[in-house]
Image 1 (tube, rainbow, N blue to C red):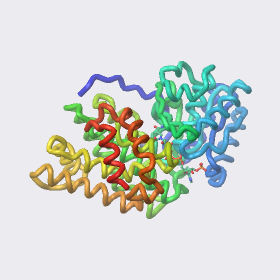
Image 2 (image 1 turned 90 degrees about the vertical axis):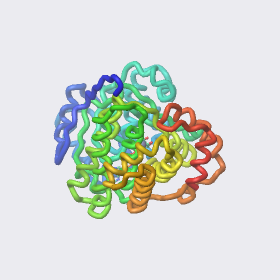
Image 3 (image 1 turned 30 degrees about the vertical axis):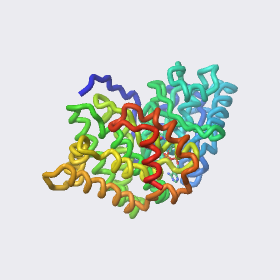
Image 4 (image 1 turned 180 degrees about the horizontal axis):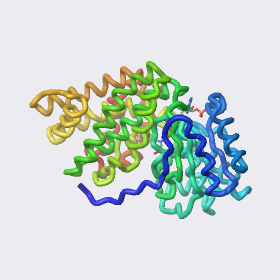
Length: 384
Ligand code: NZQ
Ligand code: ZN
């Protein structure tokens, strides 16, 4: 196991009706920028509820609405301007990962003279950020408890993640009831995203990080158990609660610290979103089993077999046989969640494979199985 420093400063209020804790924003000032997406929070009533609590706490609310799935740099810039013009004290995101990510870079941009795109490209230039608060409405990215934010500039077909300790939210409210209205498509995509975050950490070359591995297996089991239940019964509290808490644990350092490895399926997927603006979790569900097929070899069979035995309870002596069965189970699970199986299904053809693979190859350097640009093109082709 590697050395590490584990630090999560985010206070979490988890469970039913925790939104009342929004009055804690008062600790950071009296002017907030409320960041939200295309309107789901108005339909569900969370917006009215939040406004009422903020009003009672004497907090003045400015708004940035219409944040897109795969949030765009233009939205970030608009939020930064509002913060600077009005000397805003803090940001509050209410929504899914896109909204929270946008709010994070707004919070950093508000404290910087640079264009926020520079802060996306150069995380080391994030020197200060306004306090960030979130109310999570979709279990997927873990942005509510991590240091990452992923922003797109579609005019350049670029989608990049930035990261800073300063982007970890001060406080997040996680009420699983808010996810009852998440569509089947986003429920499945969110579950695939949580699974992928877990795999990206689990498939590591660091030896002896057993605590991290056993936690990861538990998180995977949770997704495989509760994903289908949430699809069938959208208002099953325990299913939504377990998925929600798993989403945070998969990416908040718990299973990464001490077992660090470069991610590889995410960089490959981010290129798909950058060129085609597809749903992140769907791209991951398409690529993951294909990457597994590619990554499986005599050298890696032991790790895939460990996954098969500990997560799927596959019995067998031969690592390669167990590994293949585990990959088949993974593929079947994504199909059971009605996730797309091929790039063609989400409107992607070979046109940009060369460009996408070139960019993704940089992001993948140092991953569980090293991938060259040519390897990535092969994976994209196999996913067609
Ligand atoms: O915009 P609204 O109207 O709110 O609707 C959203 C959006 O259309 C809707 N939604 C959210 N909560 C809902 C709801 N609909 C009904 N009821 C609710 N309770 O769902 C749609 C998708 O929302 P979005 O925020 O885009 O989804 P997600 O949370 O999956 O975020 C995806 C983004 O996060 C990035 C992805 O690349 C993508 O840009 N990621 C961020 C990470 C991070 N910060 O750590 C890591 C991830 O790997 C990922 O890259
Ligand atoms: Zn992800």
